[in-house]
Image (tube, rainbow, N blue to C red; front, side, top):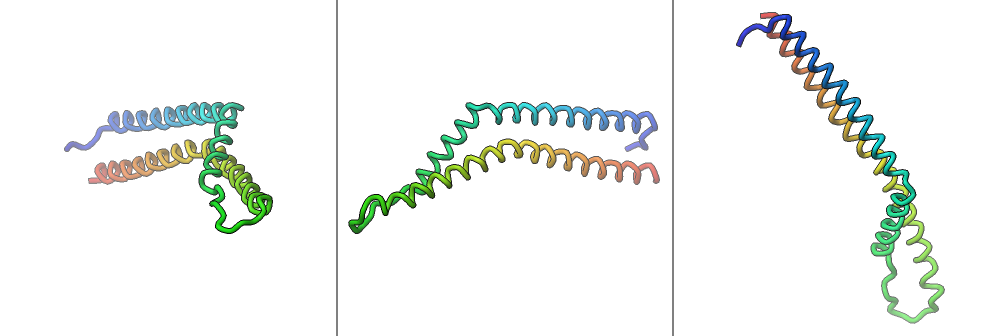
Length: 128
C-alpha cells in the first residue's frame, strides 16, 4: 500500500463533502414527503380508523358470566376502548412523522463515525 498523495486526500475529502451534502438533501426531501403524506386528511382518517379497530379488537369486552344490566357492563368498556383508540391514533401519527427522521439521524451518525475512523487511519498512515 502506498502513501496517499495530496491529490488523493483532496479527492477523498471532496467525495465525503459531496456525500454529506447529498445525504442532507435526500433527508430533507424524504422528511418533507413523509410530512406531506402524514398531514393529508385521508391519511389521518385511515390512521384513526385503524387505531379504533385495533383498540376495539384488543380491548373488546368479554362475555359476562353473570347476568347484570347491559348499561353497567358496556359503558366503562366502551369509553376506555374509545380513549385507547384515540391515544393509539395520536401515537401512530407522531410515529409516522418522527420515524424517518430518527432513521436518517442514525445513518448520518454512522457516516460521521465512519469518517472519523477513516480520517484517523489516514492520518496515522501519513505519519509513518
